[in-house]
Length: 369
Ligand SMILES: [Zn+2]
Image (cartoon, rainbow, N blue to C red; front, side):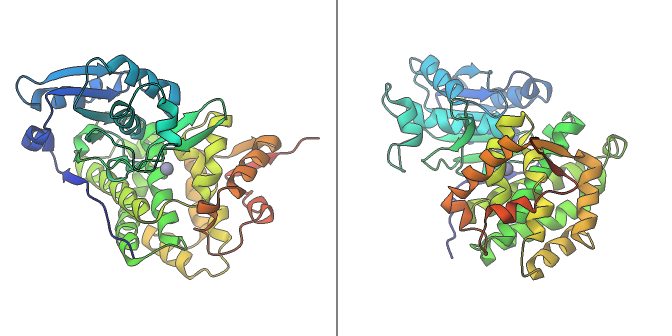
């Protein structure tokens, strides 16, 4: 069993005000999206709590599912500024972008993409701070950075594992998150927790986090079951959402995600749907494909569902069905079957036949005539 995660996490209300002074940077590069970190005040909270006299550069053009081009551009524009710390504020996209830019800026210019994907696994990187403002990716607790490779039509994970040095997790930033975005991120967290729990590489360490995260999801699941229910979400529920997401991050750091995430890689890009939605559509089929259902039963009990059918009905009411053109689906399966690391997380043989049986209420194949 491996037990390693060096990220220091402050998980409490107003943690930036209390501990933001620990961000030891004289030249700080902040990476974020265009709007949400201004709306929820997280950007201002970071700036207000930096060292007096720290210089700040802002790159606020990180898109969702950030592209390789975006992080390369952010690094090029800020090489002259020479930051000594990168801070990602936002969802997984902003934090993942901060991790990638931290690698680029710690290495020579000129071979940028090589540093991201082909250089040695332990490339140097600048210290990264994370301020999550959504509740799905858990990127504040993982060393992973996933970027979109538009030319290849897929997503790719950075070779170097970039652990945030400090993560400031404050549920108050969820007060302004729109319903759809909250749902999508909560379902991503759900998938991390389930996949980690059921992985062939599962140990007591990741199950400790998954178990707690699944139990929390079971407590707040009703609140994301529709926009009206969502209006009743209060800070106590937001805190649970943030915790489940972070626990999912710790869990997948220990043993990685599994087949739904592998299948979602190309589909998300090809279909232009959110990461959370694309992993969710494979969950019921994935759960049914376990020959031994004991672990699946434990997951369902933690979530408060009687059966896979009941979980599927719950998810269907929230996200509906995604219809995937047969060609895109075949591409997705091909990529998945080439990913030996992900295949090894499934305790049985994963074949095309197994994946074809994923089709169901949440996911239908549009067959070519
Ligand atoms: Zn995910």
